[in-house]
Image (cartoon, rainbow, N blue to C red; front, top):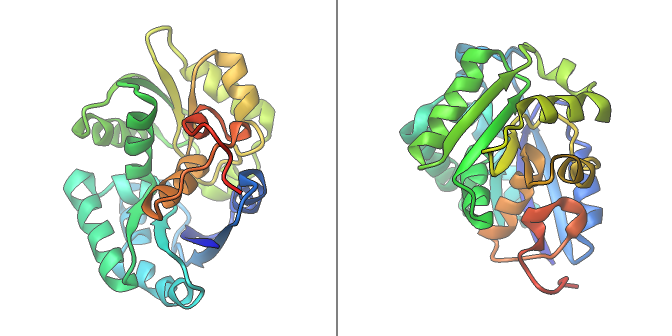
Length: 243
């Protein structure tokens, strides 16, 4: 059994995780601990506080006791708002506190993009524009070029969590550009696990979504690779399903 640990901020799109666990179809367990988010707001100051060491440390003991093999801070905006160096320090602190290999959703996007071999991406963000631009800056620091950023201007994760497939598809379509090799949907509050095959068929290219890449990153840290086509192109790099 491979046990994957996630620190998830509040309650919004977390039911993506048991859905992904089912789609992996192997001896993989997904353990989710909810962190206190403080103020639910896509503002830089609130997001920095959401990902503070104290808030993340509060959930690590539960994951460690559950036998997690790795831990990922399942929040994109609560990591990239610290900048490249700050996000690295956040992950290092999490690893020290948990005593486990650690990462965050922001780094998961970088590693996932490298995995599928893309260097030019488009971003479909639920966030306000200033926050979305910080994600583009983060990707730039990793050598990934952003050819378009589309922002929906939504302030709260709670509102994002109510979006349906129709709204997710509309966001992805609006962000896509011919020169983008992949489209990125960075909010872990957004339900996407059930929509990835439709998204990729509609756009004709890989689509990386926050909860999808977060689970993939935890698998990478735990040295597990799984072929699960229902989770998109990212999960088709291995030739066999591990059971």
